[in-house]
Amino acid sequence: MPQFPATDLNRVRRLPDRAHYDTETIYPILDEGLICHVAFLEDNQPFVIPSLYARLDDTILLHGAKASRMLKYIQNGGSVSIAVSMIDGLVIARSAFHHSVNFRSVVLFGKGRLIDDYDEKMHAMEVITNHILHGRWDDARKPNRKEMNATSVVSIPIDSATAKIRNAPPGDDEADYQLPVWAGVLPLRQQAFAPINDPLLTVDVPIPGYVADYKR
Image 1 (cartoon, helix red, strand yellow):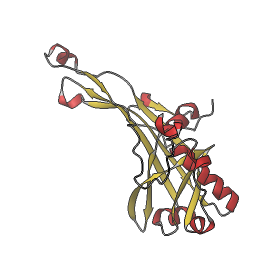
Image 2: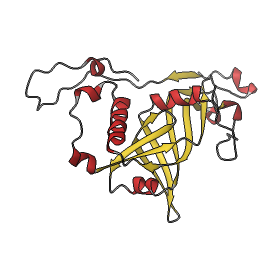
Image 3: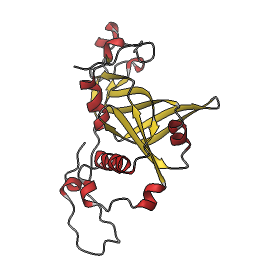
Image 4: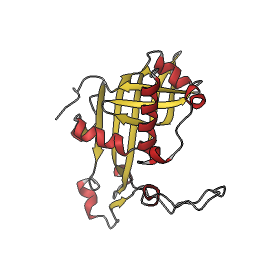
């Protein structure tokens, strides 16, 4: 399976046994996530910006207003680091020190470019829309030229990436296992509830199946 080389940039140093460098592990985490955090440095000031995103093959797509400081930085060739994470459970140990979380995360690195070609840009918007809600692009009105002109879309090749995963019970000190204190894992998951109609709906429009049965 394809792997990202472990280098000084992406090598996991703390608990390296939790690290994964293969795309078979990394890409499904990216495909499940909704929000990424984009880190960049401008004029010696660090910034971290949450953003919707999508993966297209070996690239990350981001979009936003043309005035976006983050997108201007990326289209000017600046390097970024992007993180995506999911919390799968609270790990409740016998000692306060060993409490933790079960999680899946990806940190990746790259330099992006502005997508100028209109058709490529429209396709990127389709990929981002369907990443958020698969099937929505075919139902929704497509962006018009005014909306597209007000939007920047960047493509960031994934030059380097690492996944880090914890999926285990608590790891207490040997002496603490006899303590009369409950320990274990409290699983967590992202849950969709019943859809709420927009009060401005003017016709009796049925809820699409991809909304009613939404899952990540």
